Image 1 (cartoon, one colour):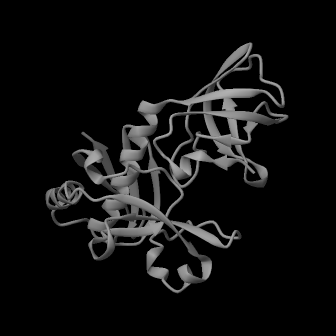
Image 2 (spheres, helix red, strand yellow; image 1 turned 90 degrees about the vertical axis):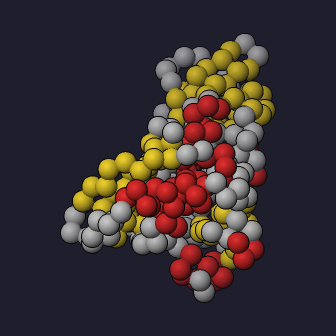
Length: 238
């Protein structure tokens, strides 16, 4: 199991780690990591590893077996050995844009309160697919509502619930095709807002900004029809 440092502190850019495995495919597994692995529509982090006698660029990170995170080198060069202590640095500018976009997409699901059938996050844009038979009557009004929410200066925090408690509140799960990971007994929730002023609360393992004002203004892009009842809504950071 890899200790997920990013889960407790999404702003942590660098950390030490010890190599516990080098996979047969050339991936590197550390005992703890700041690299977020590809999941939930959010791409894995890129960055660098450095150790006494070497350094390597990391192209991305993915989930491995037994709750590990596997760091994928950008090219086949000299690898650290098992037991080596490395210094890991993520590509912070890219990660921070992903955090801003991921948080903005949570709020998009608030201004469009329909079931979500898919989504993807990139540093330049994001999208959500909604179970939406008819196109929105006023896209500009949706964009204004979203930017007003962002400007509300709401704190973003995480908490844990049990699988049984989540089953008792099925409305918290907005995604139709992807369910929160189960089996560990606990599920992470991300809350935007506080108490009665909560704007959004849903299961999520991704990284987010600490306050909505960090998102900045956003712009709604095109809304594409994808099937009989599915529409894809694009979102851009400004």
